[in-house]
Length: 76
Image (cartoon, rainbow, N blue to C red; front, side, top):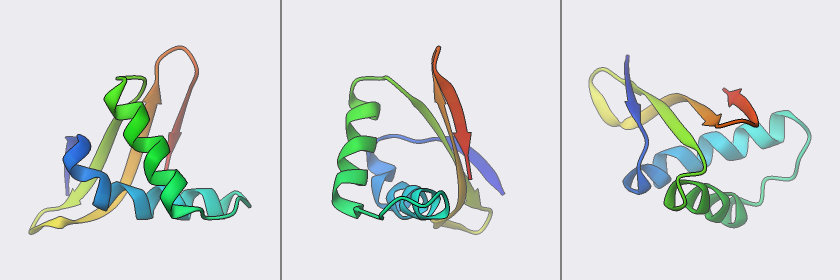
């Protein structure tokens, strides 16, 4: 497993994980608005997001960690 800092290029990997995270906590999935939310956070540098990638596959994300300065941290 490798840990990388997510960029806008990783939205396709990050969004499904974020949607599953929301569903786990009882929220409706809303994949389009979830992607827009993540994109906005990354563009504005309001969140630092790390992705756990499989060692042998850059297209497979196993988890994420989102650090929002001075607010909260969430991980899945």
